[in-house]
View 1 (cartoon, rainbow, N blue to C red):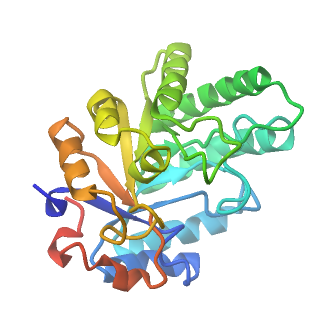
View 2: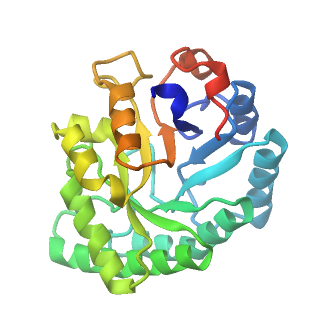
Length: 277
């Protein structure tokens, strides 16, 4: 067991960000990785020109990297936003405009996991109204994901860093997963289990793993505090990932941590263990 038994991917929206987007897949490959994930790369538009989508696909192909996770449009991320699905008006409209664009791009590169960030609470808007809108949008997203053979991910964030985001516990996200699956009958909504966010919320991470490993579609990690690479904080990440494996999770583990020098931050993981199996 241990890190070499996991299937890691690099999140290119938080690591290698000193490079232009189209150069990051090659940088990940040069560090030994063959799998990557991304937040929605075009913060300003849910519907980029086809040429931009084609260029990203080409960069992934040229580097020999597979995209294994992609966010739907989520507003300004990183930044003040935490998704769009529950935000009435223009942001909801942008999310809907993005659904098929993101799903079709995912299909074009063999990506089978699409993450829909729920969105912040909006002052002056009834939370029940936001939740109703979110369910409508997530049903649309789940159907689009199903159309391309993908799962829809619902993520818990952490309250200290995302105080307006309502899904700040594992049960809160699981409740949305259940609602979406009940509404669609497709069963393709899954939990995105982020060990850093769960720990920041003070949850019993081992208990969350035991309860929800079979509902989990993707895992992300960073150490705590500081959101740095494994070994820079206090989380027993290696043990927790072993617990996930023993509980039946055999999917990808996204490296979603901060590092001033991404290439120098992977010393905790042997080079021979970086290529996804």
